[in-house]
Length: 384
Ligand SMILES: Cc1cc2nc3c(=O)[nH]c(=O)nc-3n(C[C@H](O)[C@H](O)[C@H](O)COP(=O)(O)OP(=O)(O)OC[C@H]3O[C@@H](n4cnc5c(N)ncnc54)[C@H](O)[C@@H]3O)c2cc1C
Image (cartoon, rainbow, N blue to C red; front, side, top):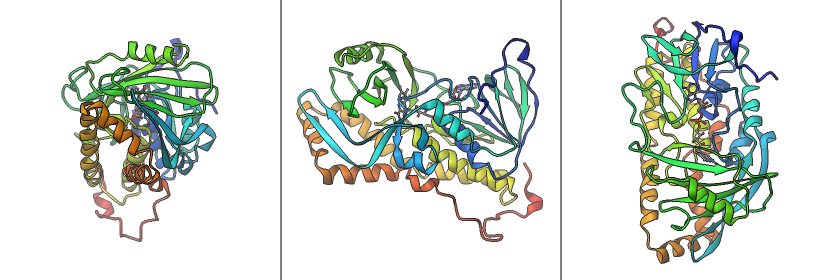
């Protein structure tokens, strides 16, 4: 499958045109939205500044069931049924009621892309903003009545000046990807590793992704990452890092749909943002599909998607509260909590609720709408 769409030099021709849907950002959220539109026959353009799968944006671990539900099993590198969690004074194995898998980012993007519809195309371009009904890129302007911002934490198509780090509600993460192998999915919740945050070691068959995340955007993570990797006797090579929004943002704004990190869909505390990008990407795609199939107006779809995302606010706020509490726990209290999660009953209960925030069953095909049941506007009113 040709993934290399980057236009370079003379090939970097001006980009213009009108589409039914414009999806800005070709990672977890953007490719999931595109996948959801596969049956519509719509002219969909996906834009990203890099080739699909070129820039890994995370440690790439997600609940295995989510990967299965989306037909992405072939990207799986390693699967884990428990988490080994360390504090300064204790280590506990947290048994999981479901498994986590690390995966290969490039393969996963290729598998998602392979599920697109026949009218879906991809171009590399840097999205710079909006002018009227056009999306402005470094290769020209493109137009579509339905626009999705899946561009990650920068929320490029948001209105007004977006707050920038370090003052924004963002966490930050950095990791190295040395060659090697290991059996355990490990976390360190230890102030000696990072003041507010955690460190991780995520094995992925022939490489180990070792990194540190800080809930406080003012705290640097380079030295903590180097220290953790060296303590684990891992090479400090192949760095990748990013900012991570840790608070829900409005999922629609000025006629644009936002999905994934651009909408703050990454979960606070755990910084798990892949399955939520899938989950809200599907929700967004379902609304767009209803518009394309003439079952809903764009305005109604925007409102329904906004409300769907906002309905999750209390869960995100609860996770944010936990994110604020954990670094404040006195070490002995933290040790007791970590040890308590070593008990199967506690861990299974907590992780079941945690998975339910964005459950993998959501990826199963939605039942077809009953005749007229899903139609909230007469077809003639289905305009922009
Ligand atoms: C170090 C680290 C490790 C992490 N590990 C995990 C993990 O193991 N599991 C997990 O669930 N979550 C993890 N996360 C969080 C997760 O990476 C994000 O929540 C997730 O990537 C969000 O997906 P997204 O599609 O919304 O955005 P992104 O994956 O950030 O994708 C945004 C896309 O938009 C493109 N783009 C950005 N700006 C422009 C522009 N101006 N023009 C054109 N294209 C543009 C980018 O190239 C990219 O392809 C981690 C984060 C970090 C920083």
